[in-house]
Amino acid sequence: MTTIIKAADAADLLTMVPHLLGFAPSRSVVLIPFSGGRSAGGMRFDLPPGDTDPAAFASTVLGLACRVSLVDAIVAIVYGDEAIDADVPRRAVADAIERAAHRSGLDVIDLLYVGPDSWTRYLGDAHPPGGHALTALPAPPAAATAATGTPHPDHLSGAELPAVDLASRERVGQALRQLEFALGVVAGAPAPASGERVDPLAFSAVSALDDLPVFFELALEHGTDETNVFGIATLIWCLSRPALRDVGITTWIDGVDAGDRAFEAQLRWENGAQYPSGPAERMMGEGERPDADRLADALAVARWAAAVAPRDVRPGALSVCGWLSWALGRSSHAEHYALAACEIDPEHGLSRIVLSMVQAGHLPDWAFRPARR
Image (cartoon, helix red, strand yellow):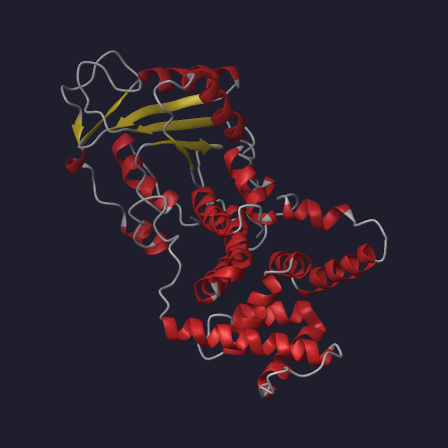
């Protein structure tokens, strides 16, 4: 959020959390890193089960917080299901976070607990019976609503693929079949034995692959056009082939020139040369922060491709949805897409990589750096 909103107290801050995250957290631990009294966002973690070692959990989350550029303080908020009574629920988790923060040299601005209908502070010796009513929280500032819109109900909201009717899927499936016929003919294979006519639009789609990075760049503009059946079929075909998919992701991260370099590197690698480390490191989240709007546009295109793709080739598009979500800092969405891909193909490569990164708590390096201006 680039608009500066001031929070005067804990109640104001709690009002702002859904706008910082983009959703209303539940059964979560939210860490808000501060640098010089300002924060640009927050980190959400699943609330650990009761048998989890609080110290190990705190060490993990503080380790991530310490990677934020110039962080010097935190606010931690525990969102739980238990009502507030004589003691604040989940105190062991809060205490462990406080100790880990102090060991890391970070100030703890506040430690808060939010229950089903009330909230309170861990810090201090006493809290009001039952806590403070959530209904008494102030309304969010108009500037926050204008800057971020209405937050989603929870961390998985918005991960659902677009609704697509059966006719749309059948058209794309037929276009994919025609595309594969055309690719075979161009490669020197005989025409379909059935004598089926190959749609001329399929040959036009094949010609678009002559410049793969440009094809992916144009997909950012036209990839969700329902009438562009052969275009989306070609995109699905590319995303189901790792070498072409990686060129597409690289293009969506850094532009056509980067896509050209990735494509050339892929060709050299197929001829026995060593694959350069740069593109692979980029895929692992290294380097400058990409343009978030560009990645969001790419995610919209990949989500549409996954929605209309036939089931057997859907994992490719789903894995790209997962990677793009991870790159945007939406680990819960990334896991959702990767799991959906693995339900179809349990050994799907990129989906397994995305799952391993999410489950290990690995975030892109650029998530901890300021956005480019």
